[in-house]
Length: 97
Image 1 (tube, helix red, strand yellow):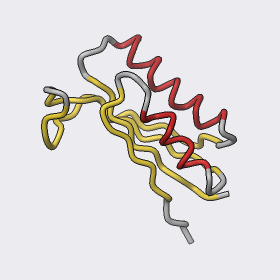
Image 2 (tube, helix red, strand yellow):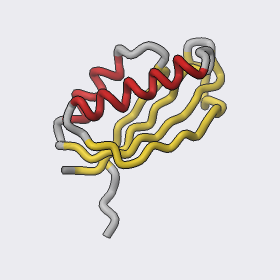
Image 3 (cartoon, helix red, strand yellow):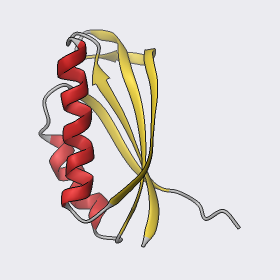
């Protein structure tokens, strides 16, 4: 299994319950595909580098997980169609020796 990190930017226009449900849905997508979540960091409301869908702010989340090499591609397919997700990026984390 490899270590990965999912960076997730959720819309600032939704209330806290919807935002939490969106993040939970993303975490559920990781686990349903066979990944194992190791850490979740919530960075909170941050200024976006550029305007996305007429929004200048978003809530940032970073989810670290362990998974097989084919999982990130499948995860991105699920994230692409999720409501309230402005941007996402899955990267392989470097091994800490």
